[in-house]
Image (cartoon, rainbow, N blue to C red; front, side, top):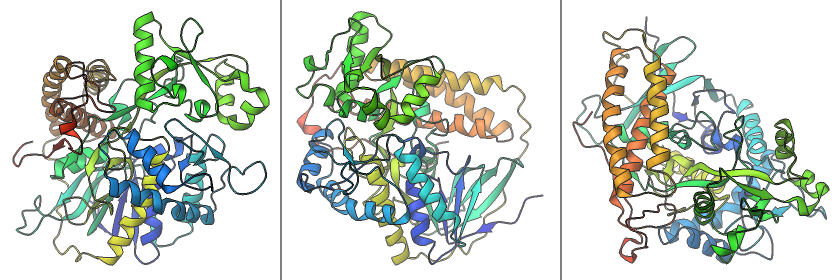
Length: 535
């Protein structure tokens, strides 16, 4: 028996910094539901080690932060967007501190400690040692728990957006709610809201090797695309240069701050190599460092390179990176005494659902904030630690806009989920096999270095996989695994589609068939939108 629809003023999908910040802002006045497919703390935010970038000292300036961001973005950032987020950032960070977030203090006790990361010309990264995201998540979740207007639905997986078009209404396209899988019961429930906020994070699990948690399957981008929203610049997937190379910890990130605090990258011969690739050596932007590591590994046949900070001394290393030291020791490694084996891994999507600075998409009432959105801040390559900053500023702006422009309530009844003749899954090996095949082919064909031949090969195989997945999806009762498979297949296609559109190499998109940057493609987005009538 289907349950009655759940109605709210605002529906937030995702429980990272972007979703929680939005919910806290609007939850002062309205009823809010937060839907998260695992536990509330299971988010990319919680895994963020390095910190949040913001102009905080007299030795820094907005102009410097803007310049660094534009330089990293390789001619694709939107100047107005960059300047707005940079200038509004310190006030939003101050609100985080007022909320109870504890950043590491400076040695003299005057304000927070500021570290430096690749691409930054000044120390401007506020951090909580090497577990910044976890500390921000802790403070936000505590505030959420104290607000009676906010209800959290954990282990609930959003399936699809319900729009006016889907309901057959002749009116401007607007969002009306979401179909949600209650994973403990297996029932699909209807959530009704005139405002839906996608804060679902990124898509790292589309790739075989990633720094992201298992929840990062591109759900928000896939849902928005299926609903008809525009998606842009998905070819720009940032590969973090330093993921631990270890069979028991394939997703463990070694923070950018290790290089920012003086760590060296060493080749198989034990020598530094980054000075051959960029004047800033280890502090070059991430795309350059990742490609340099990839080139060194291919040139020498090595499985990894090494990150060495032993010269800074054990007291310094233990004081700055306690979480990393503890985890490495559990794996039999001691970064205070030996270099750490590292490889690049998929880390962050710089594209996403096309939005303005207030998080608005092309569908009325639908907002997207955080990594799931493409605002124009990151351009072709994200500057380190600008991600938490963007999520914080844009979710605040989205909340302010949503409160100032309330849409009319949803007056139409959303029909209950109709499973049709779907049966229980019979061969789960189909799901696991397709999951692994997508991630492997994306790593092999759509990775750090690409060619048109590889991209077309990936597109052809993905089209075949999509047919299998669609058939399986409609023939069987939905489960979390099937939904994630469906979403990573969609996002993989979007990445390939965008990559084939861009006939140049820029930032994170490096194509051997077009190895040079084309000035004609500066400020040009690759945009994809679902055609009416396509499945």
